[in-house]
Amino acid sequence: MANMISWNGRRADIAIDLGTANTRVAARGSGMVFDEPSLCCFSNGGTRPRLVAAGEAVRAMVDRTPDSLKVTRPLRRGVLQDIDATRELLAYAMSSSLGRRRLRAPRVAIGIPADATQAERSALLTAASDAGLGPVSLMSEPFAAALGAGLAVHRPEGSMIVECGAGTTEVAVISLGGICLTRSVRIGGAALDTALADHFHFRRKFLIGEITTERLKCDLVRLLGAPDGEESQMIEAKGRSLTSGIPGVQQVPVSELRQVVAKHVAHIVEVVRDVLNQTPPELSHDIHEKGLTLTGGSAAIPCIGQAITAETGLRVHIPDHPHQCVMLGLEAMLAS
Ligand SMILES: Nc1ncnc2c1ncn2[C@@H]1O[C@H](COP(=O)(O)OP(=O)(O)OP(=O)(O)O)[C@@H](O)[C@H]1O
Image (cartoon, rainbow, N blue to C red; front, side, top):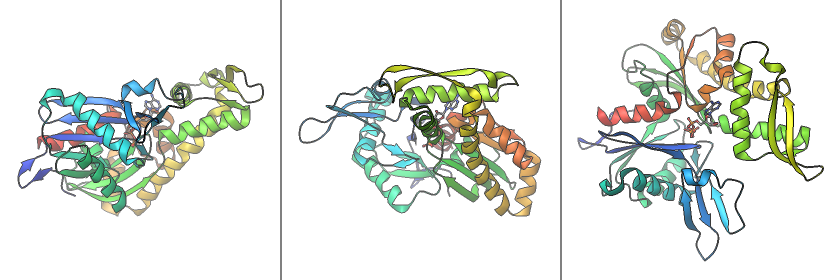
């Protein structure tokens, strides 16, 4: 895949990392100009749903809307699930990040999972065009992440990237400016949120909301990744008891939730092993020497890196801002 974005020699103006949880935009020469949740809120009244709010303003509305409003995530598991919401989110991102500098039909590069199907690509191109974006180039997210993490992607040596976001985990081996091997699974931080909420639902008969679950996950994985002793701690979740119907707080030992996290992490390690098993020997040797790089917001889950090292013996590097690597890579392609 080419890694310089241009149309007849004309470079892209805007790079967009349209993620399941977050959308980030960079403009050529200005760096990152937008970083907000991938959320839209529509009003249900009238013949057609009307956009009420998008991005950060919608975070506080999740699980709190009356019947007249509906919160939607444009993407699910890394790919577009709602074309209208995607169009609205892209249009909102453009207007709030570029304001009066807004270009007419800007040339745009958008990151997309390496294994996205033709139908998924076409749907994204349609939504981008409906949002008023100009020619759009779809770029592989794991390649962008590797570039954004500062890996030597153009050298004749293998680099391995594990991009672990909210909706997908993508593993790729890169050399000489291209992807040699890649595998994606539609499992990311959001799947762990669901597994934790399910645990509370079925084991504790207690319902917790989406935002509470995500906060609980971040606290939990920090405690699980901490030195010995933290597992004896309790973790607290606010929600509603299914047996009494009364709102309340559940105190759960961190150790009770360890298995839920371990099961999730094991899926990710399995994908890494799969890719390593198929990697040609010279590239394999390079990866053995250098280790692999873990990026994406879920790279902040310490047990993912720890489990990869324990299962493969490879060192795991996490860059300073792992959640921004796809954006930084796309931005680097704009500048090249
Ligand atoms: N400190 C943390 N601990 C655990 N998880 C975290 C932490 N910070 C962020 N995350 C998780 O990272 C995910 C968001 O990462 P990111 O912004 O890379 O995803 P995305 O680009 O929207 O998703 P995708 O690329 O999969 O479509 C969320 O699931 C979030 O809960």
